[in-house]
Image 1 (tube, rainbow, N blue to C red):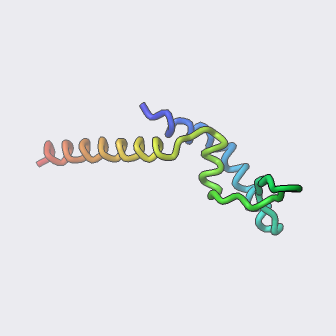
Image 2 (cartoon, one colour; image 1 turned 90 degrees about the vertical axis):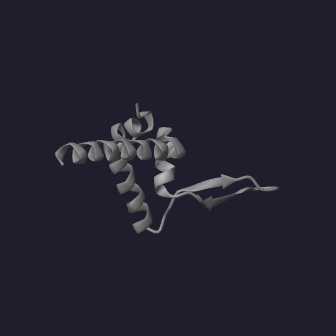
Length: 89
C-alpha cells in the first residue's frame, strides 16, 4: 500500500491549478507569506518552505513517508527486473 503516493496522484489536477496560481503570483512580484506575531503589531514574511512542500502540507502528505514509499516501489521494481532478467537468461 502507498497512501502518500496515492494522495499525491489524486491531488494532481488541483495541484496543477495551484502551481499555476503560485507562478502567476511570482510573475506579479507577489508571493505567499505568513503572519509573524511581534511585540506590538506583527509582520508578514515570505514563507520559508518550497512550493512543493507547501502543496504537500496542504494535502496532508508526509514527505518522509512519501520518500519511503517511493524507495520501496523502486526496490520492488528492481527485484522484478532482476527476476525477469534471470528467467530470460
